[in-house]
Length: 135
Image (cartoon, rainbow, N blue to C red):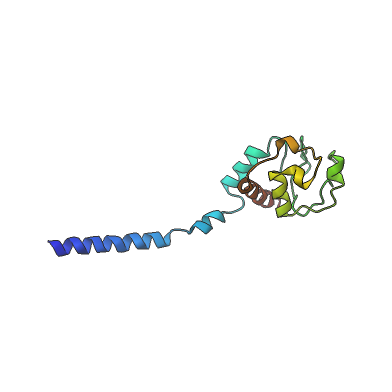
C-alpha cells in the first residue's frame, strides 16, 4: 500500500507543476489589453466627470479623443488656460501619464490642478484606455 501512496503523491506533484506552468506569468498580467475593464474603470473613476473620449464632447475639461499625438492646448473649441495654450509640446504617453499624476509639474497654472494626483499605475491604465478608445 505504501508504494501506491508515493506514486499518487508523485503524480499529483507533476499535475500541479504542469498546471502552474500553464498559468500566465506576472508580467503578462501587467500587460493587459488596453481596452480592458480595469482601464475603463480607471478612466471612469478619475476622469469621466470632466472629460469624454468622444470627439467634440468637451465638458469641464477638453475631450481626450486622440490626445496622444495632439499638441497641448490645441482644440479650437475648448477654452484652455493660457499656460496650456503656451505649453508648446505634443502629448505623448509619458507626458500624459505624468500630467495625470502631478499636473502642475508638467504644465504650471493648468485648470486641472485641484483634480490631479492619481497613482502612476492608474495613469498608465488611463493612457492605455485613451489610446484604445481613440482608434
